[in-house]
Image (cartoon, rainbow, N blue to C red):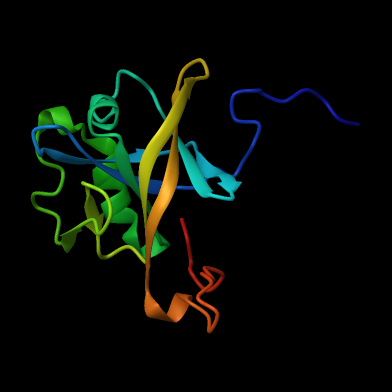
Amino acid sequence: MKKEANKKNALNPMPKVIVTVRDKDGNDNALVVGYCGNCSYAPPMVMIGIVPSRYSYHMIKENKVFVVHLVTKDQTELYNACGKKSGRDGDKFAGLNIKLSEGKKVNAKVIEDCPVAIECSVVNSIMTGSHEMFIGKVEYVHANEELIDENGNLDTSSLDLM
């Protein structure tokens, strides 16, 4: 027999990703996002949900770009560091032993240590209640070489994602 479950997290598991952003003054930040997924394949687009009270919210509104990073289980420390501390309290990247680079197509940092990073430019957004869903057109996908097949397709099945 089935019974009613809590509606709040009806669709599980949710992907665990880190998103990097930059504000109009060039300040960088990273945050963990629970609401993330593909929303179009032609053109390729992803969406992320951010609560308006979050520090990174104004950064996406100003700069209109973000980078989604897939995170493996051995990157739990990085994930926790980006999720437990607010950018309001200081630079999240300081003290982390990670390699950062500039995006190839968007004005935001890429965490080189993550096996996949997806650069996106915001094309639309919608308030859905607690979150604003930012829809980003995929501009560039960084991926570890071993994750790309002979046809250029990304295969993440070998990754031990969080």
